[in-house]
Image 1 (cartoon, rainbow, N blue to C red):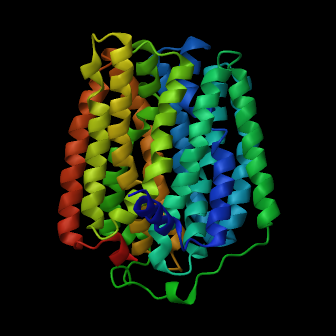
Image 2 (cartoon, rainbow, N blue to C red):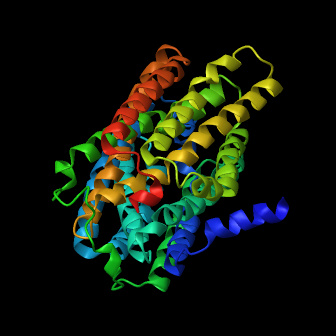
Length: 415
């Protein structure tokens, strides 16, 4: 059995091109410093003494920048190339954390968060496009995106876990650590690729696919736009990670920051250990239907949080881990399949724009999620989680209808 499991891991990771691994390594270094965003809501509440509505407004300033960055990142990637865009993104993000650290008034903090999000989020369409272009053929897309996810989550295992302990010393250390890791990722990108590095689509990737030959722009691809809207709606639940979720753990479950960081690490450790194998296992299943189930499972993982009310601390901690495992399973089913589906709708001439619009669907969620989540949290801390169950059901139904209309292609069929 152990030999068979080892073979599954080997097969899941085999065949991914070297440059995809390099991109993943750069993401690992960058995300290893992801300490500010998971604790930003608690920082604003505890260190700046802000109320939940003001915190939601601040986090939405980050979301506005994220929306702009998603569209801008796609355009810049289309014009300059994926690697130069990644360099620009990392160069902008490096001082952004220091700007946030020095801002104490709400207007300046909103401006700093807007600038930071421009730098941080522009890298999404650039990395996604580079990952596609580095693949030898389209059949490698899903595994390549899973490798990216592996790196991001391995980094985010280290980041929040270490960050939680740094808060015991000084919250400002979070901002300094993020600055160092982002600058390190910038240096690695310049070392491996340089500014003038150009990725080139493989000959077999330049063949347009039957389902997108008529789509000159992603904004004219109605099926893709519906998919992005549903993805954005589900992401509004996921991005409670940045607002209501850590605040709920702090104030309702009575967790300390280092315990919250360790709980985030549960999510990322499970993803690191099992996502590649799971992606390989579901490769033949219908892509959109699998994606629909993943979104529903994620929302259920959030939605069951209030059921731990009144339990003692030890049982509550176990329940929080159980909830995290459920939403992690859903996340593993959706995160690699989403960009793979977006890539299947595109061709080399519009790939950057497609990935930019897909990234923007998350950015819109970053804008909306804190406002809605904190507004609900201020009225009753459990409301946001009950709404998550409703959102999960609606997204599941929408994606199921879309799957019926778009056909039951698997991720390998899409490739």
